[in-house]
Image (cartoon, rainbow, N blue to C red):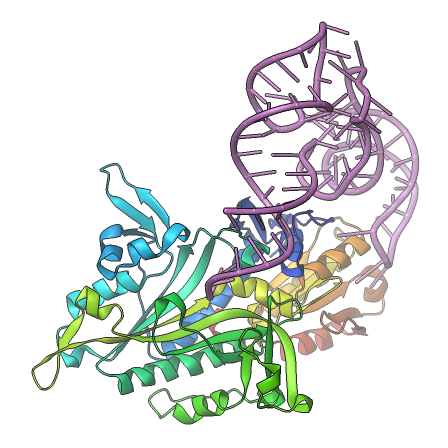
Length: 448
RNA sequence: CGGGGCGUAGCGCAGUCUGGUAGCGCACCGGUUUUGGGAACCGGUGGUCGUUGGUUCGAAUCCAAUCGCCCCGACCA
């Protein structure tokens, strides 16, 4: 991609409404634009990150055995009257009346909708277990949207729903999602802590929040230090028994500040870690909370009708964009993990229009693309300092600097955004270092 | 929903107290000299001062209403 042809409206100064790092940088790096309170447009750079995160979430859901569907954003009120939540949900639900006077709503979540879909199709115990998910925009009319994309009113969420015959089977689904979440967040370069959570308005008796660690996070998390270094399982067989993995992760102390009681904490202070964090995922087992009132049942092996046992599993996809920035930035801008970077490498042409520089940049771009990397070439007429500042701001993992001075000696410079140091080397060596040093996520390969 | 703050050019701000017809920096356009960490100089473009009503000879400025946005708290993917 040539920057001279791209749409990247960077801001040199921070808009005064943006207080936290992710909001400031998303606005400055031209990733998003605010439409109204808590509602944003995604510009090309932000859109690429959002889509890459979505692709990774999708890939892990598929691996766990869930099937993707797509439900509408607008739902009929009748469904919510069936579950009883139409009256319970309150002002957070955006209610709409269509031209015929029918009560509709913009979905804040999809338990009712998925229950309706499943009940119309599932009749026998042979139709379960199943897991269905979708990645769709939600709307919750928050009283106070804030922190940019992190607590918007409109947000992109992956929500998965499990359908099982009994509790024990449902627990297997819960465990699959638990493990899938560990892997999903790790794949985005995040350290996620699963924490036992209140089941809240959705109800039920088994629930975990997944909190990613970031110094600027909203809530404080207390946990045993062992959790910090716990290895996320690789190459998981989702048909195998996952209970040992879940047990390993849930046996270690972890609590949000409202649940944490320093006086009665089982972990000695020397082993206790206190960190700030952001909730990016939440999984619930909620039994027959929806299946019972909405009449979702199947005929069991013994010929009796049984309520289907359900769970729901959410990931805040758009929130993750902000969450990753909160977890990974410095004073100069964003530092993207390879897997979700909008481009893996930025080539800085210090003298656009110079034949040698132009040719070198084009050659590097072509070879990096051939190796499967997403490449942004700054071929604008900006001065060097401005180009460097923009590159640091948008946070691409690698920068390759091509200028007449270095090129005279057959050298280009390679800079790793995270560490900041620059090395001069021959172009071939630069290619090799960047290609070898980039972990392109398979789910994002060739997306753009 | 309680408390606080702010709406003046794309962004950051001054001007409001004390009314006299809008300004600064950056950005943008043209030119010259420059060119390896946000260049300098010259010349330009761009604003119904959030909106509506009122007071006044005259309102960004005073009064009233209204809309929007942000921050703190309670609540949430």
